[in-house]
Length: 444
Image 1: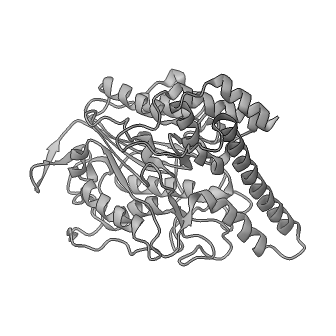
Image 2: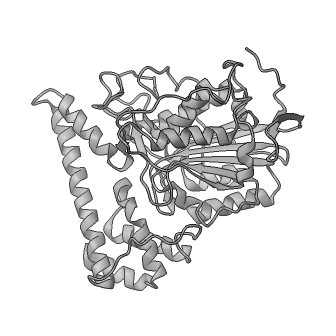
Image 3: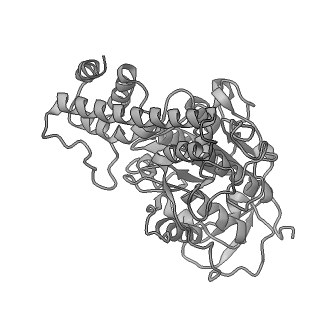
């Protein structure tokens, strides 16, 4: 069924009223979709982004206004049992078809993301050249899914996306008066730390995160669990928070559901799995924007116009899997599925062994550095009070992370969990020189 509203309508719900009004604007809906990982074991992140694209495309957004970051090494990966097809749920359709390939491979970087958000074409390196060429009447939706940790989210190439840098870019976008309102959905472990104490409530940005500032987020539709992927898949198909908001969009009327209603549905589904696991979906920024309709950012769809607030959301999920350990699950399932004595089985076991060894090495490195700097009495996993950002000196934080990686190797998706330790080292006054000395003594 076609929308009853023109494409250039923006709908808001007054925070003091429960009724919605349609106001014609000369505005455009824009979107940036980011999968910040690579490798078949991270199938779910690109599946999430592809699904999000299909929702926006169905909603009427044009490809020229949807900018996609994804490594694009999943659909035609030799391990994919359905070459050229990506699915985001066990019985789901192909979500890969038609997805724009704006920034792929080595062009999926933090620098390109910042340039895209700011509309700065001259700062781009590679890619399609599409940027958020938005104006003061336009609404922007940003969705980012990846591995993360305290103060950072990953990128497959180059530096991490640091919380202060991301929020600074958003502030610059606001100062340039190049959007009306923005919504930011973020899926990663400890994703709340990207906005906690940093995102102002007066720059017309509403954000929700898969987890608070200290929790892991969760993969779902994982092999060996119920519901799991179809036969032949060795990796999780989606992430819990992500599939919760997208499957909500799939069945709800976006012209009638507010972000607050979706937040409540996603919060309940992400926290209350049938096994009692999950994370706390959290809101940041201008919470009044939660009264806006999804339609204002994602467009309309042809779902049932009989939707009411009491309509049930997608059912609770069964088993879910910690994001940090999803690669271990992939290697384990891959080795078990391979024929006994085959090269594939040997390769999978070697991958699993290498990952376990890497984790032990990282654990040992961080423990020794901590001991060299503080002795046995240190507790560097302390969490600062809510509403206070992770660290006071972000330059110090970046320096310590980079120093560790220079002398001890990449933190990897697993080792990212120690970024809070490095932040607390900065808060305790550790200098670059002391970190270099401890790192070289540990990892030489």
